[in-house]
Length: 157
Image (cartoon, rainbow, N blue to C red; front, top):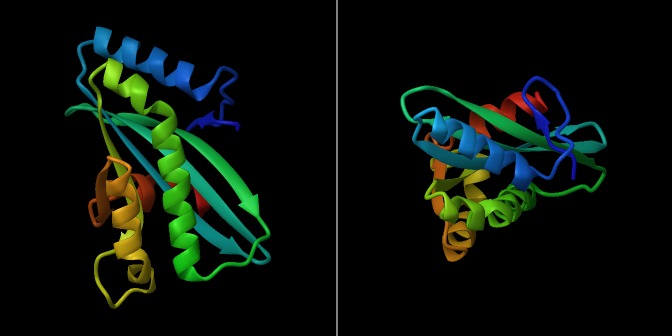
C-alpha cells in the first residue's frame, strides 16, 4: 500500500513508521496531537477513485496528512460505496491504533455520510456508525467529519 504526503512525496517506509516518527517529532516540539482518519470516493466514468487520509492535528496549530489512493472498476450502489469507504478507514485505523495507544494520541474515524435524510449517503449512516463504534473507534459524520468530507474529498476531485 503506497502512502504519500500532501506534497505528493511518496513515503518509502511503512505508514506505521512514518506516523510514529511524526508523533515523536511533533510531541518533542510541544504539540498535543489527535489523529482523524477518513475516506472519500468519486465515480469517474468506469472507475471509482478512493482516497484514505490520516490527518494529524496539532492542537490549535493546524495539521498535516498522509494519503493513500486507489481506483477500482467495480460498480457499486451509493450505500455499498459509503460502506467501502468506512471499511477502508477502519482498516487504516486498526493498523495504527496500537501505536496511538502507546503515545496516548486520540483517534477519530470520519465517515463522509450526511446525517440529513435528504441526502443519498444517509442510507448508510446506521450501518457505518455501528461498524465504526463496534470496532471501538470514535465516530464522526458530516458536518464534523472533515477528514473524509474535506481532506479526502480534495484528493478525489
